[in-house]
Length: 143
Image (cartoon, rainbow, N blue to C red):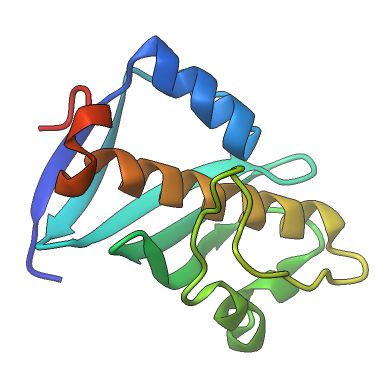
């Protein structure tokens, strides 16, 4: 992706909304992302059961184009890496009530990993919503 590295500076209200929508506590002041046109790449991590899992999420026009597990550090649950599983996230959107637009299947023995992946998907879609030009009224601190 030929792109520009950008930074989204987070305001207190955005951190609160991320907590509400994605159930993720954002402690950092900023999030870096890569943008080419209306396509963005987000590298995001969250705790699975005990350790962080790092994801790459490509969003475009408030939809997920692709979602991959970059680094899996847990002892179990790595089935979320499988292409058949990650394909469930393609074309997902964020509903008005902060949920993914379609059901995502669980995986026996990977409950925490699945929950983490769904949280990251919701967070990436929320971040995408904040930085897109048609949502300029809600964008605070995007550069």
